[in-house]
Length: 211
Ligand SMILES: Nc1ncnc2c1ncn2[C@@H]1O[C@H](COP(=O)(O)OP(=O)(O)OP(=O)(O)O)[C@@H](O)[C@H]1O
Ligand SMILES: [Mg+2]
Image 1 (cartoon, rainbow, N blue to C red):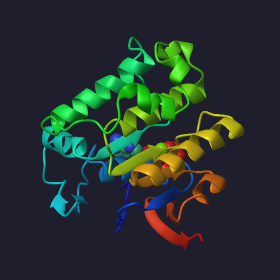
Image 2: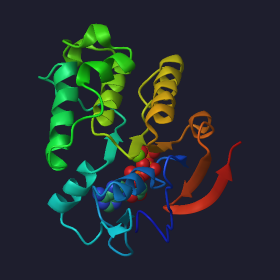
Image 3: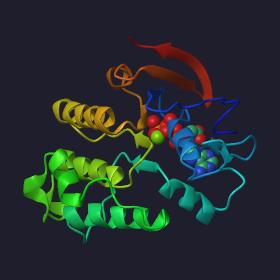
C-alpha cells in the first residue's frame, strides 16, 4: 500500500501550514518528501523549482543545507554534545554545505532567543523535554532555513510547555521569515496555521484556511 496517494502540495514562501491527520495518515512521510529525506516512488518533489526526486541522498543533503531544517518529535540532540555544541555543530555543517556562508546568529544568541542562555553548557540528559525541544529549534534555526519542517514538535510535551515551544517557533518565523510546515494530530496545533491540510490514508482530504 502506498504511504501517499495523489498528493499535490506546494508550500509558499513564509507560509505557515499544518499537516493534520490521524496516526498513519502520511504526515511524516510527506514531511520527509518535502525535505528530501526520502523520494517518492512515483511523481516528483521539487525545491525552488529544481527536482529533488532525481537526486541521490548526498545531493539531496546538499540541497537541504541550502535552506531546509527539521524539528523532529523528539529533540534528537547529540547526547555527548552540550546545548551550545549541538547548535554550533549544525551551524558549522550548514555553512560547510553552503560553501562557507556565515550563520545568521551565533549559537549563544540563538539559544538566548530560545530562552536558554543559562543552559549553554548543559548536556541533553540535563535538559527537560521542553528545553531540549527549544535547543532543537535553535539548532534548526542555525541552518538559516527558508523552510522549517516540524514533525509533532510538541508531541512529548505538556500543553503549557507545548504552547511556549509553538509560540517560540511562530515568533522566530515572524522575525526570520521562513516557511513552516508542522505535522500534527492535534487540532489546536493545526489551528495555529494559516492553512491546514487534512490527510487521511495518505491522501489530502481537506484544506482549510484560518484568518
Ligand atoms: N519506510 C516506510 N516504508 C513503507 N511504509 C511506511 C514507511 N514509513 C511509514 N510507512 C507507512 O506509511 C503510512 C504513513 O506513515 P506516516 O509515518 O507518514 O504516518 P503519520 O501520519 O506520520 O503517523 P503518526 O501520527 O503515527 O506519526 C503508514 O501506513 C506507515 O505504516
Ligand atoms: Mg508521524
